[in-house]
Length: 72
Image (cartoon, rainbow, N blue to C red; front, side):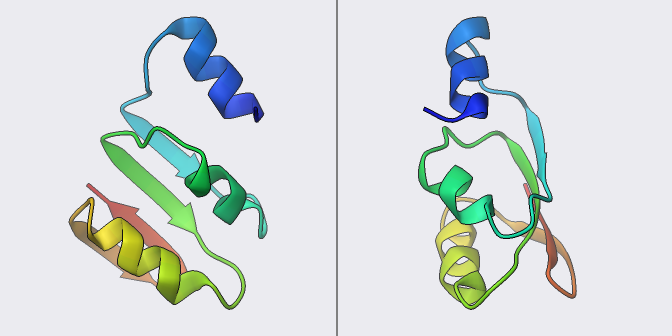
């Protein structure tokens, strides 16, 4: 269990907004996360397109600049 999962379990809710800028570890978090209503994420590495496609299936992509995304 990562720190975010532990926090979600402790407080009993999923946050409405989550911003991830964790230098390549975002994939591990997205893989095990109960996704919030709004997700801001900066992707690093070659799996970016795979994860963007996955998130586009769950969210509307509201903003993109370089490797920074906002999904709502």
